[in-house]
Amino acid sequence: MSSLRLIVNARIATGDPRRPWADAALLDGGRVVAIGSSAELRKRAPATAEVIDAHGAVVDPTALGGAVSTPPPPRTP
Image 1 (cartoon, rainbow, N blue to C red):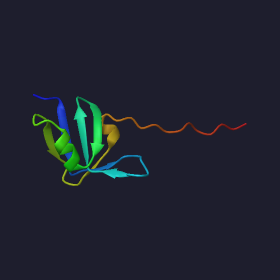
Image 2 (image 1 turned 180 degrees about the horizontal axis):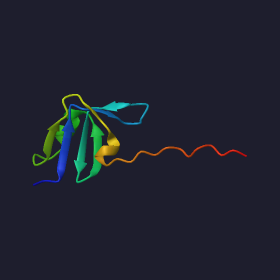
Image 3 (image 1 turned 90 degrees about the vertical axis):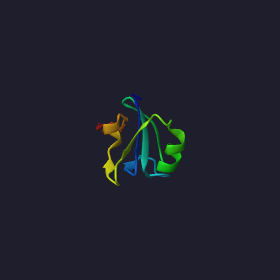
Image 4 (image 1 turned 120 degrees about the horizontal axis):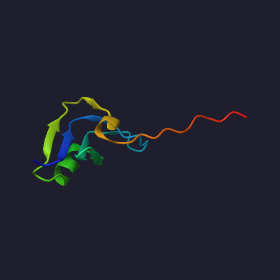
């Protein structure tokens, strides 16, 4: 069984103001290797990848294995 999973038809917040939402993610094990459109990632993923249809659900990138960084709190003098 392949460790590659392709989640399609999702709503994934990217954190990128130029492209705030994506609808697909390609995972290798627990690591996110690509975020993009369902069409582009279907072309990129091998035929052995497990395809999971999210049916329009919001998918949390941190639950996929992605990292989210937040700035530290402001320092007070």
